[in-house]
Every structure is written in C-alpha cells, then in structure tokens.
Amino acid sequence: MQALGKHLLVELHGCDPEALKSVELIRETMVSAARLANATIMGVSFHEFSPFGVSGVVVIAESHLSIHTWPEYRYAAVDIFTCGDQLRPEIAAEFISSKLKCKKASLVEVKRGLIGKNPRRVSHKIIFTDQKAAPAYEELSLAY
Image (cartoon, one colour):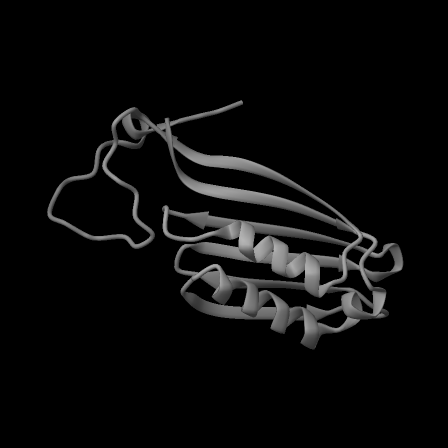
C-alpha cells in the first residue's frame, strides 16, 4: 500500500525553556525547517501566549508543520505532515529538535491516505488533468 502523506508526531522533552518562550525563534526555526525539507511555503502564522508558550503553523503546498510549546514543562509538540515523495520531513524534525536544544525526542510516523496497490506515482505537486478522479471509496482505505 502506498500513502498519500507522511505525518510525523514529534515529542520534544527537556528543551530550552527560553527558546520555547520566543515566538521569533520558534517562527524562524519552523520556517527554516520547512525550507530544509525542501517544502514550498504558502503561509506562516504564530501566536505567543501570556504568560508564555507559542503555537504556530507553517502551511506548505505539501501540507503543514505545526508546533505548540509549554516552556514551564520544557516540552514542545510538533506535527509535520507532508504529501508526496519529494520531501524529507525527518530533516525538519531533526533541525527543530536541535534548535530547541531538546534532550529527549521521540517520533511516531503515521501513513495518511493509504491507497491501493500499484497506484500512479504520488508526486509532491498536484498535476491537474482532464481525467475524472475515482470515487473516494475506491481510492482510499482506512487504517486502524
């Protein structure tokens, strides 16, 4: 089975709390991570919470990178969801972990949008054709 996307769930423990408080550093780190993974950045949105903590997302043509930080626990939750076979989301995860000075990281990979055997090659860009798409129930299967 081939998947339309790869979703990395990244747990970052023991991070530098000052880094986790800085919306500027978090934004710069996430944008740089997307670039290193060779993603096409479409939009960026970050928010700093009071008294501290940052949430943000980098929307990419191939899906997204998102983060939420808890400086008081020295913890950050990161999602990296990429579609196609042209990106290397693992590079983005390693870069984010390094920039936040993470002492203990874990990563879970989830295949998203499982499709049947012998599908067309899944590229990182959508190419529109005159072909009529197959109904969703024929193309997608659900994994539990």
